Length: 285
Image (tube, rainbow, N blue to C red; front, side):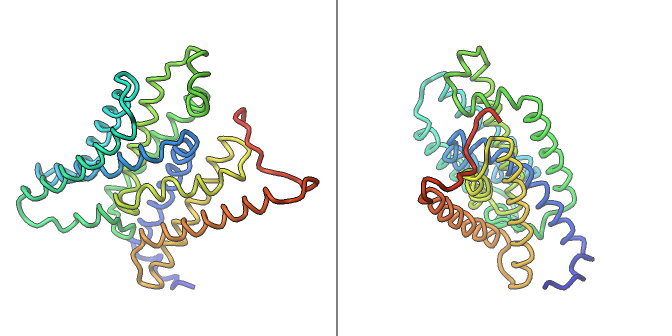
C-alpha cells in the first residue's frame, strides 16, 4: 500500500483532481469516438497538437493554450475538408499528423532559450499538473459535459447513423464539426496526463473495453468514465510505488484491461445457445 502521507503533498492532490477531470472527459468523448470510429481522426488531431505547443514556445505563450487553438484549427479544417470538399479522411489525417509534428519541431528550434517542459507535453506527467492547468481542465470538462448533455440525442443520431440523421433534417455537418471540436478539447485535457504521443490510448482504451458489455451509449459513457478513473488512479499509485513514468503506466494498465475485455467478449460469444446473453447494444438507450 502506498504511504498515506503522500496525499499530504499538493502535487499528488493535483494529480488526483486531474485524473478525475480527465476521466470524465475520456468516458464521454471516448465513447463517441469509438462508436463513430473516429480513432484515426483523434490520433491525427492529438499529434498535430505538438505544432501548437511549438508555436506557443516560439511566441512565449501558454503551451496548453497553443495546443488548444492549434487542435481546434486542425479539427475544423479536417471536418470541413472531409464534409464539403469530399477529401479522404485518412489522407487528411496523415497530412495533419505529419505537418503538426513538423511545425512543432521547427517552431521549437527557433524558440529562444531552453524548453524544459517540452518532453512533459510529449510524454505527459500527471504529477506535474500545476493548479493553473487544473482550472483550464475543469473549464474544458464542464464545457464537454454541458454540450453533450444539451445535444445528447442529436450527437447520438450522428454518431450511430449519419444517413438517418440527414433524413431527420439534423445539421449533420455542424454536429460533426462540434464532435471534432469536443474531441480536440478532450485531447488538450489529456496531454498533461499521458502526453501527446500516448493521448489516443487513454481516450480510446476505456471506451473500447466497456463497449461489448454496455447496453447503450449512455451506460457506455458512465462505465468508460468509471474505468478511466480506476485506470488513472491505479496507474498514478503504481507509478509512485515503483518509480515508473505515470502516463506510460496508466496506458499499459488500460491495454491490459482492453486485452482482458477482448478475451471475455470472445468467451461470452462462445457460450452455449441456452446461456444468458447480456450487454446487447441498443442505440435507443
